[in-house]
Amino acid sequence: MGEIAKRVRAARDARAWSQNDLAERASVSRPSIARIEAGEDVSTATLAKVADALNLMLRLATAEELTEHE
Image 1: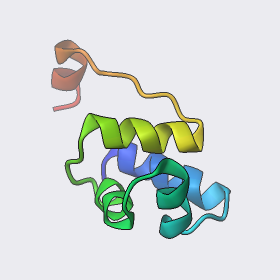
Image 2 (image 1 turned 45 degrees about the horizontal axis):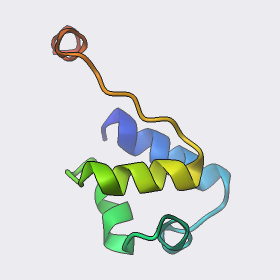
Image 3 (image 1 turned 45 degrees about the vertical axis):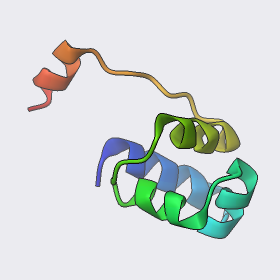
């Protein structure tokens, strides 16, 4: 599970929200939430809506940061 997936799941769990609850608050589908939490690809627009609903900040990694973790 990727870092984003872990953070979204933890933030959702901390609020005691179901995936349906988060989907409604973010105006996205429940399968989109499931894809995020499974570490699958979703659009940046969907991810931004979910982050906003959870009051999380998104940060893009630089190419150097990405290669450091390989």
